[in-house]
Length: 178
Image (cartoon, rainbow, N blue to C red; front, side, top):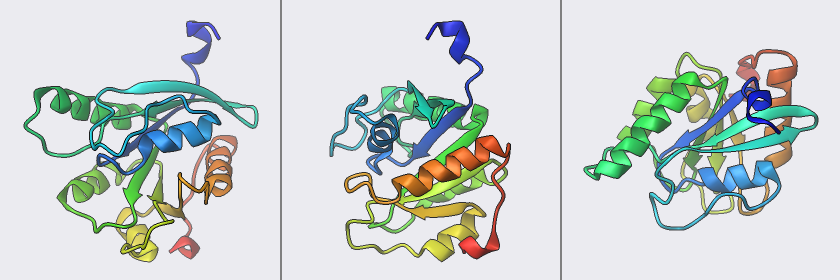
């Protein structure tokens, strides 16, 4: 693709705290390992863009640095870029680690996405979960999808939700999701 052709592609920002599986989700949606994945929190320090076709719909996936408070100068720049990408995205995929409780960083992200179109992915569902999807749904007013990037659980549901959003031009909140 030429650079000018993909500028009109809808932007899907993948945000969340460090080490929740954002890069793994990019790789799953892209269908190949395009982004470095590591157990080390803070591997992604900049935004990375990946162009994909999702059943004929061209999308620009944006992998972002983990959003958290940090004293690291470079990581602060990455966090700032992540917030900027979320503000300019057509759709936000907010990724949480379902095996750990929400914290202040999650609360800040939830506040940031409150009036935005988004989907919440409860990733790492292959581990013992501590988060309640109904509570997360009520906190975010977003559809919550149980997901495992490692096992591929929830991938088809995520793809369908993204396609519906762009085909129907909106992702409506449905109380039945909670």
